[in-house]
Amino acid sequence: MKTSQREIKRSHSILDHSPEEVVTLLKKHELRISILGLGRIGLPTAAVFAEAGARVTGIDIDEEVVRQTNAGISRLTDEPGLDLVVKKNVAEGRLSATLRPETMLHDSDFIVMCVPTPVDLAKSPDYGAIRAVSHSVGKSLTKGSIVIVESTVGPGVVEDIVGSIIESESGMKAGRDFGLASCPERSDPGSIMKNMHSVPRIVGSTDVHCGDLVAALYREGLGVEVVRVSSPKAANAVKLTENLFRDVNIALANEFALLYEKFGIDTVEVINACATKYNFMPHYPGAGVGGPCLPSNSYYLINEGIKLGNIPYLIRLAREVNDRMPDHMVELTAEALNEIGRTVSGARIAVLGIAYKPDVKDIQLSPIERIITRLREMHAVIEVYDPMFAGEEAMGLIVHKTMEDAVRGANCVIVGTAHAEFKKINLASLSRMTARKAAIVDGRGVFVPADAKKAGFAFRGVGRVALSAFRPDTRPTASTSRQA
Ligand code: SAJ
Figure 1 (cartoon, rainbow, N blue to C red):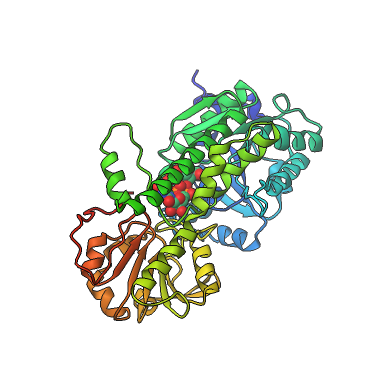
Figure 2 (cartoon, rainbow, N blue to C red):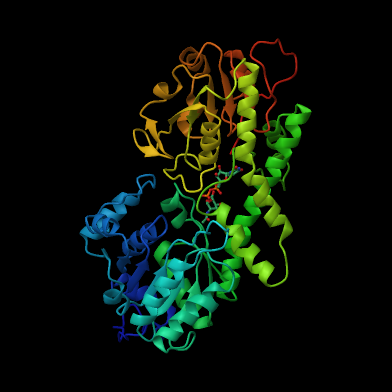
């Protein structure tokens, strides 16, 4: 008889069940999942598993996060669709949150770690949160449960740190008494709910049966393809390879930009033309690389590599190239202001966009902070507008409520983030708001340089051809902006 018809003898140990029974328990609202960390990844993960039928408890150290979640509120207002799923599942009693891990971990079939793994000022991975939740899990673990790590960590951290701490706290053995797996998060902030239901997930576990159960959970719970790899560290290597591939290729685009500016070549035009070739993956130059992922992920490998005797030169150099882009933006700003007869000191500079990427309310490691800091050190007067932070305080400044308030009388307008709103800016009306002589420094390929020139701006852009507003210019001008 099929599992779904036969009553399942509910064992306390999910490891005693088959993948088909995991699916049945999920559908019968009998599967219990704890999510450690209700941040950008944890809250959507908790909501989606609850929506699929699981009884989910989110565990966080932030009282306000726990309170909001239990009130059916998602503070991630820039994640379309998340608030409705949180509200619905809290109302239907399948999603709740608590500050106290011990009460819920004991009763969980699956325990999913979604805590942050930043790097510290010395660029060393900070696994403090992962260690803390591993101790909590070890203290309350029930034999036969499965621990899944979604946080991005260096290869081997799941086995050697998470597994070891849980074993020492519980006296149990990974692979025998509890399952241990890695299923790295693969979501793009700002599109997480869409990604959750579309992007294949990578599962690596200490033993095949545990991997089968984790794969069943994600395949059924999220409705996505699951790709199995041989171990947790292989799964973490996949995640890091994806992100470091991106960081290195962005660095290459930035290197081309620094070169082609000197040649008077428009890098965006070149990259868009390259993208017509079947095996070219376009990446674009910009004001720098920010966010919780790319600026940190490389150091998970660099540090481990050096310890093991292999220095990842290219990965390390790519980080240096990307980290230099904010300084290049400051150089372009000084150059553009000089062209209109001003210096940075005393100039009124409007910065449009502080978020690390378009249409996301997130300034984690945003490269724009360094640009603002350096320009303020050079005694510029900085005004800021970002639609995601309008009226709020960020980076030590009050973000204007409207773009007009920020750009009024400005000698220079810097584009720090390619928010959709900025792509609709009418340059002619912008030129009526700024000072009579003004410059644009485009850090994200939002504007077409020739349009800025036509509107009377001195123009600089990362990887773009420098255009003076006041000299007739016969050179061909790029007719495209970035496609990304
Ligand atoms: N950036 C460039 N040039 C590019 C692309 C990005 O300068 O061609 C800059 C962005 O402005 C931003 C930074 O790089 O400051 C990071 O951009 P991102 O799109 O990679 O944004 P993230 O950090 O949110 O990347 C996340 C990652 N997802 C996970 O770690 C799970 C990354 O792996 C994904 O590729 C990315 O989302 C995505 O687009 O899905």
